[in-house]
Image (cartoon, rainbow, N blue to C red; front, side, top):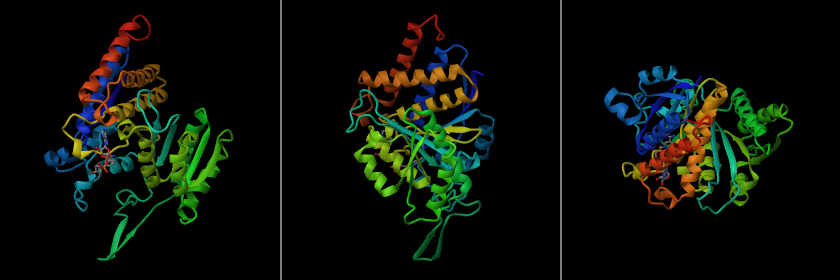
Length: 368
Ligand code: NAD
């Protein structure tokens, strides 16, 4: 393979800044590794797309994305979108539904050079991504929140056997491939006995096919406690949509913040790389956003492309990006959220510089 068409969607707020650095880093590994090529196609999305094309998720973007090998998506300032306007959909949620990207993979681990309260954390939140509580994506038609009278709101939460089984399979495959071989099922079955019950029972049934993986299950409230008391004990955390959304911000906080928290929206045939965090509007346009989470999301995309196409070069590029992030952080080049004074682009430049130097130092091997 070696040549990939990537749909690049910058998003709102800090999105354009962090996605620009991500593309820069991708071009650096492309230049460093013989036979690896990226055709990055910028596709309109978010508030800019609404202004210029009348929709936060134009049909053209969806159609173009269908022709890509994978997507890279920045965050969107969805709290400010008009809620009842069909042209201002939350494009993150809509893309997850449209491309059936049912698994949201959000790793959190300690990085060298980043001081945190905790050591030894290396875990992954595997969050169901297409059903659950989020009203803009849990029904085929309509919105999962209704008001029978002006003072009452009913919110639907959708849990299906199919959704529970397939997210569990992804999580258990991942746990089986990792060192600890340990999965935690997180739920609130003591109260939500039907929905969480279906989720846990489905997961346990799937787990019978993974005898090597140790399984525990936890109530979400107690699990939040365990996560801050002994985060180093956990490995793969499999959970429903909203619990996973909340827990993955918590786990980002354990390892240094949202600037270090990457993510993948994964389906059976397609994926979109997207950091865990939102569009951080209060720091947008100041060149102080940390692009690491988005860059590491693209690194996860390369790992996926490497597995899907049995392409060692994509896997090699993923390793090179991760090494560059570790080494640059160790050198103390950090954005302000991590206590440094590098701008978003200075940090990106440092990664590019590391990748170029590495390519020169190993000339004659598989790098150029
Ligand atoms: P947020 O994740 O944008 O920000 C939370 C905090 O983390 C803020 O202090 C912010 O400055 C900081 N932060 C986040 N990313 C950072 C980065 N890369 N570098 C440095 N600091 C960073 O969450 P929020 O404030 O709740 O939401 C802001 C907007 O983003 C809202 O409109 C929300 O709806 C939207 N949102 C979008 C997504 C998405 O598109 N996937 C996800 C979550 C929130």
